[in-house]
Length: 416
Image 1: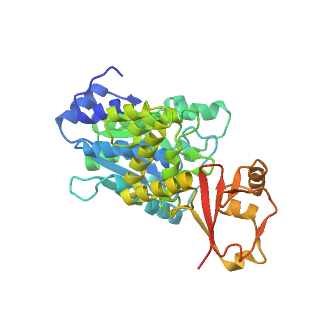
Image 2: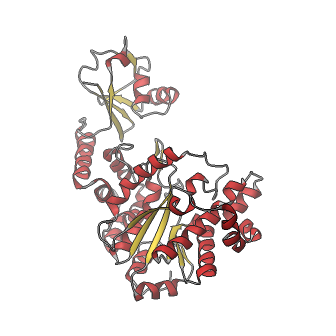
Image 3: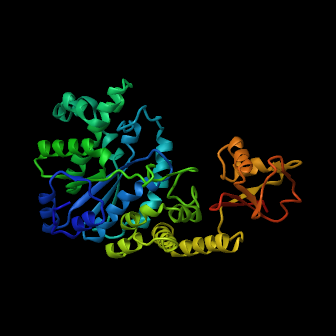
């Protein structure tokens, strides 16, 4: 990126690697210098929690606010009823109003950790159901639909890739990009919002919103996208062998969240420090360049910084203390993921294979047996070699520690 921005926000975006594309970098820079810019990112309520894949864009909103501008977190109470088809091979399952409402409640908890909604000029939490649910179909087609060219909509990569594979794209899904464009228009009308941000897979949807807003109200508005992240080994960011890395503490413990970052590949440490922490860029580069055992300390700094932002400093310190006890002393630690078994679950006994699955260390009995056969399982730090082992209430009178490999552990104990 050769452009040298005048505004602090764009300087941060470029220096830390957040910027993939912008519709008009110079004009946006001028706008940021001229006064407070209001910007939004939309989040459809498809699950009860956001996950690590959302964290890059949440950090963009945080930097926007830290540099003196106003972020909007737009909950997709309306658009979730349609489902974004971008780069999907099939239609999203449709959720009812109650599920969408529950999901929004869960997602909102996370934003409060990163953004300040307290002051009059603070961040805004909005829900597009407020205007989308009120639309009258014929009026909407006449007032908004006439600005959309089907030829152009079919040319967007997110739609084209689906059609090229001869996979069905429903009329419901085809409407999604019109509704997202309409969100930008409404946010501009109601709140003076002039910038939409999102991942680079949203480029087509963002451009539609810019075109619609300019044509309907004549306002100059902008789009800015972040890169779609993969780890250095090619995996999609935010996915692990155990599934999504959720941001809500009740869906993924702070310790497991901390461990995800501690297990970052060496090659990703510097990049992730720039994206997910507020350490100075020079320090991120220095830590990312460390090698050998020193890079492990950089990973601990990464894990602590990211966990502190989401769960607080105490949770980060507790996770580090538990990890050091587990890995350096072989102890059980106080903060490990814990499986509590009711006595009626035990019956005459429960198999070690079931316990490994129930504790989340394996997805299936087959995977648990393979883990044992390949000498990857341990019980209280001793090798576990008997896949037929049964444990009764006496064996679980005190907690036991199960391990899968060197870095994944869980406690199993009887419920009190």
